[in-house]
Amino acid sequence: MNVIIIEDEKPAARRLNRMLNDLEIDVHTMLHSVQESIEWFSNNEHPDLIFLDIQLSDGLSFEIFDAINIKSSIIFTTAYDEYALKAFKLNSIDYLLKPIDDEELEAAVLKYKEQTPKSKSIQVDFEDIKKLLINPMDRQYKKRFTAKVGQHLKIFSVEDIECFYSENKGTYLHTAENRNYLIDTTLESLEEELNPQQFFRVSRKFYININSIKDIISYTNSRLQVKLNHFSEQEIIVSRERVKDFKTWLE
Image 1 (cartoon, one colour):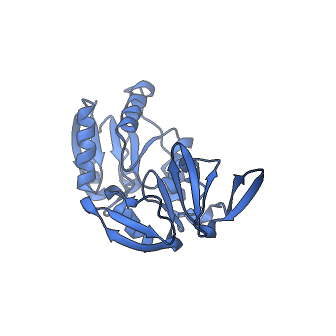
Image 2 (cartoon, rainbow, N blue to C red):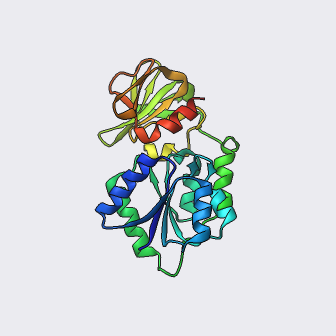
Image 3 (cartoon, one colour):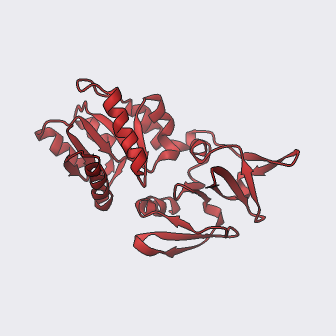
């Protein structure tokens, strides 16, 4: 299998390379920008499979496909779950949410091997995905959530929710009144329901509300710790792979 990685964050690219090596997959090369990728594809045989980050240092990776007719299969490695998951699913595209999990990576590679003949690449509708990426505000997002309290349903406005988090296979919301409520959904389902201008998934366990941030502190290994106005049950850590996107979101 001929594999390449397109990822602008070199530590993330090296980590993915090591993870693929553990699966006995050799990475042919690692590319880090739109321009570098265009030049490489213009002068080299195209790979069977590309691990593709969406936002590169000099633009969206879709610009590569505008310039070069690439028929390789693609597994996205992205932090843009709140924008593009629907498009990925509709187009039967595998995606890996950063930070990449070992088991999910292995499952994605296995899915590629089982479902994609060597002579046939996945057909990707990049225009549909770009529309979701560039125009996220055109979408409708949930304004309220409900939680069952005894025999009653309690209604919460998203403005009053500090964060959503997972614990013991359950999903909870934490309110500005410093209360936790179990809700009947998953963090994955929230990806298409929360406004990305207001909520950000800082890790696999937490979505946080930008209006509830009290403090942001430097943490070990180039990570960040986020303090909310009231939530104190657990530490909220922005993973190293998401720090760059988190800082962009804050602005």
